[in-house]
Length: 324
Length: 142
Image (cartoon, rainbow over all chains, first blue to last red; front, side):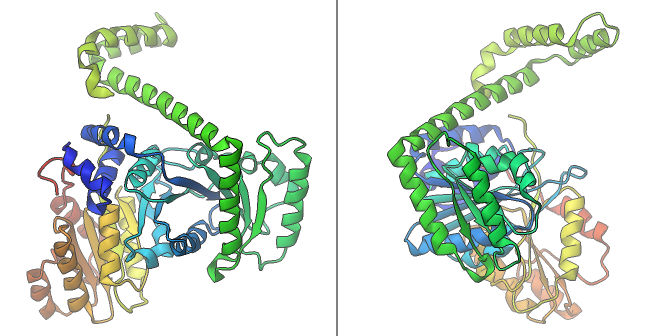
């Protein structure tokens, strides 16, 4: 991969950035080179995660937020993730439908992403996509997850501020108490707030937050009522995002989150490098033999795995640098 | 890294035309064939479609038009892709299109026109045979 493409990305060239993103998603070997070279230029963008059940209005809300932050003269990136069919591997990515009015705005870059079997609401490639947008000097990047349920909280691992969207009529307080996703929120949005039950939901949420006797970070999540399709409540939500950012900066939480994120990314890189290089190094016949041995109970999976790892390391050590 | 290239397709409705039943069927067909389909919805300008296609780095743009404005809208999409150096993205179209317009559209760079009644399999087969993902990061890729 040429360094030329890196230069173009840093200048904000959409085509070059889109190419690298595609390469990353498809696992093209030279995409790693691109990621390596842009990495020093990342870490400046503010990252906001948006999650919630299917149909609560994530895309519509992101659309209103794009407009609001453009008015603040900030450039915006959006990584929008939709599910992949577990049966065919195909996907319909429809998040753009709600955001298409920004397609002609050069200050906005929207990229749809299929989850490709990744659970947790994100896609494996999501964090790399964020890096590319960051390198393009986008000021704020929204990450919209797959419609999530109760435990898909991966977005908190990539976002500085995580927004969880709820709507009235989706279950009682017990649903909320058991849902890990609620613990992930820095800001709650109750969208479709014109519907019955919005104020009750707000009260239930407040009670639940009161029950959390000591908030580990010292941050008490705000609750914002919105009607995204009428652009109601957007201003308040933007203020809340800024307020949380200010809190993170002054409390040292931002640094802590980013450190945690760097650590996760490093561990993931180690794991995938090892996986890749084991894949490349395992002799098929040898693998077959081990599988037969397993079936006949001559060995066990743990010893067999160690055997494979040891053998692979010897085999591909000279090629190691190609896989990291 | 393990390579798993998937074809990415952008499906769009340019212009003032509210009929999207057909295009949704096509989108579903592509999904079931294992493609990743970006659907941008109704009432798109050629500029919006072209920008979305470039941001999403798709291999194919499929346009649907039932309003009669296909000649202008389809050729405008091809023209703007060319202007932005993205003419390696294949453009196809479908909808209510008179037979006599097809040669004109093909000459303008629309690679295939699928008329009402075309079996889904035929569209998928055509796509698999004619659209290959380019090695985007090699020097020859733009």
